[in-house]
Image: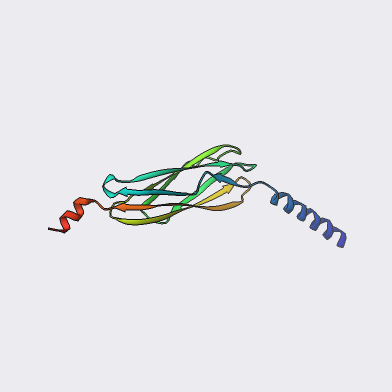
Length: 139
């Protein structure tokens, strides 16, 4: 009985070591973007984050959650094959939000093996208020 247990344990340990040795990651050119100064009156601004699947298996973005309703991520739900590139477009709407902003987009990615990872992207900048709104407040 001990021998069976030892064989089973060795087999399980071997499988765990092999699975842990897989290359499971994606690489972004950058994870932070600074819009600098933007004008509220010009409307929404967008930035596209590009990444490459450098893992040994396909990966999918299964969820992208913004820290605020003013921020909207857009991405393909198609799996990204090993060695291929993809992108995520993040749009920020400055309407009614003068001043500095720093927003996060949390990505939940899943590899074909079932392993999941979380990646955080960040956008920031400063919104210059619409001058028409300021003039009407001075009347």
